[in-house]
Length: 285
Image 1 (cartoon, one colour):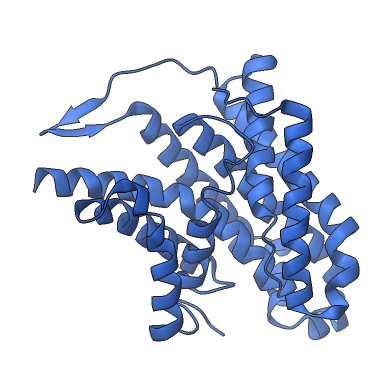
Image 2: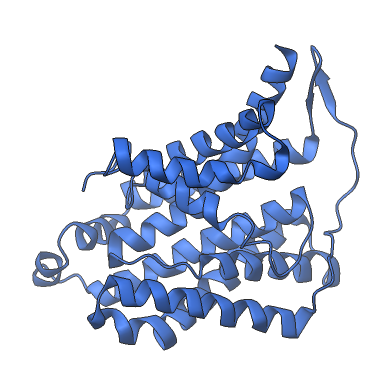
């Protein structure tokens, strides 16, 4: 039972981090109705932006996370405008395929600039806290709190501000929103900026938990997509629920299968979601 409780704690903390880019994926899907798989490369962009701010410029982790949010958001808007926006008229499948190609381009740009070496952020090593035999790492707690803060901040922006209401209006009916004086294209750029900025935050959190390398985003993109599908594409609360469920499932699966096979949980979750919850657990459409 102690092992189960340990895995539950680990799963909640891992799921919170997965929920951050899953929210980003769902924001873009809600407003633009496209699946942007270049989010994997934007996670890597955020990780290296955080590395540059923290290690090369000597900034603390919180400022490194802010830098990653801004740089990944800006890179997401620029790459969307150059590579994906011209293809939106050809349908969602064409854009999704193009986003996979864009992901490869962005990842190789990161490789060209930073190389393939594994790097670490400059954070102190700390002993685990132990509560009744349950080990909790201080860095994991920091990552969890930052993930929660990012999600609360974004949810507050979307729920309680004029900009957030405008973005939700475009997501519900872009034609009607345009008649009401809301610029759908402007809201689309903001959605991409926020979504890819959230991916950048996740990149730094993953780097703080492990290390930085160009494939850091590709290692989690399946779990991120599974969380978005399971929770409901386009649903912000659904992304949170999906992220937590995937995190818990991946951790608890190690009780019965080797760790190397835990990534298969993402595939199983997508199949299960499509069979039992075609719109996701909290999906509206």
